[in-house]
Image (cartoon, rainbow, N blue to C red; front, side):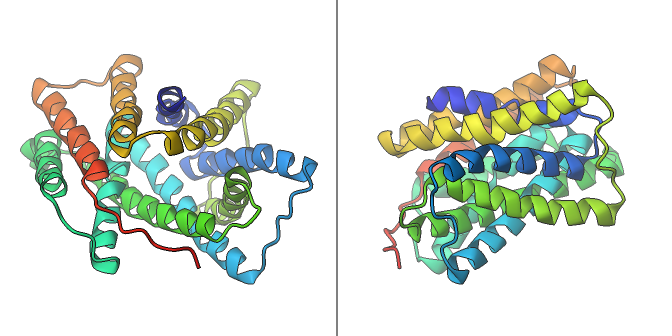
Length: 288
């Protein structure tokens, strides 16, 4: 289930690249359609959705972080391509590690330390050798990818906090609420940026709905069900299918011109993500 879920989510950037709807509007439709599909089962079960203002404030913060994450990631995809944008977004593991070190005083072991050096080496091989010759938009795309990683890390922190405080609310319902709140923020950002909400054709609607159904619903459900049953090291390795396959789809589907040095850099970066995932000694934090 975990491998299938990660593989399905690896197509997320492909959907974004194929749609001609604006990047922020595309993010809006992902969480809007996905949120509706996830909230319907909760309504059928008559699950209690309102859990008080404390829980709602966390959902607001999580939804905002998720909205920023998707908006910047979609823009990064347009500028640097699906593969590199996805690798950059998965650097969230390093910002989560930094948060753990500063807030929970987690220890830094050799795996985590090595992961930072591998990540920097990978980025240098992908971008650093030709940095002075890169187009301005490409450089902006790199920065947006790193902002994606920061906001993605914030989203993970908030969603974990929400899960810890959930009593009788399923993970799917929590994600539905976060998705719908993110949709509100993304609708505001879309309107302010001047992007159009118009879906120009049935084909584009199919792409947007498929993006939401595969990435926001099916892929997430498979991953969330499989993760508790697996060791962290094995799960971390399998989850690397997402950035690894996203890079492969970029080369195969969009004819990305990739040198051997860039491939080595991508391998180093993905290896760094894995070490950053399994290299943290997380302290158990009791739910409030």
